[in-house]
Image 1 (cartoon, one colour):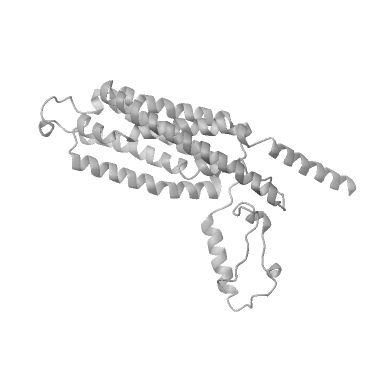
Image 2 (cartoon, helix red, strand yellow):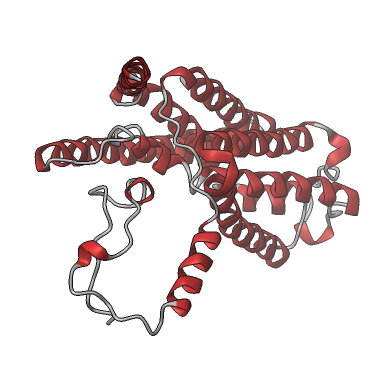
Length: 303
């Protein structure tokens, strides 16, 4: 019995030691490197797309604007699906990698369409109204590429920032968090957010100047190719840091927990609330991942 207890204690200590060896600022070169290349790619890809649609595919301005509006709306909805997948079964790391791959496929499709003459209408030096617009299958290739980038955005947007903050969370199984330790964690996260938004701004600035200039003055093949290469670099940099990351296990679908809360509340709707909050239900293991102080506090405002 004593041997079993000692072995369990040693295993727990070994797990916490391995946890301490992961995460922290040593993961930032990989995470921020990925974010810089990713933001550079996405900003460079979307900044001048209206010009590509009107001047290269000869679409009317209204139709091109509607296309980009639909694309933006789809890209705003897919993060909901990505967040559900990350929380339910895939985890943030897997969702980011999958989203990056889909985004890369979409960008490669745009590069191919910009390079192959068969995937875009013939050049037209005359008035735009007299130019032959893109055919149905040429637009289908464009739509497929944009759809891949929308799916990729769904995997990236809800997970990248949260995955970075995971690297500074406290150790699993640690039941009590002192005010000093909580302050240190908050300070590290503050520094992370400062670095994150600064690097994102620099990457977007470079994309909106350098990439747009290349698209307008060098060619659309290079203009789409450079962001595509940056996206590939971001995937490689992110995957290389795999051994150093803190990778939290998926907590399950939030809809399942919401349904459980609603069912329990309805079942116990006639039960009197005890005066001692310590007698109420507590799940420290679950609360540790959804509360900054490791524990959700009860409230009397709803009684």
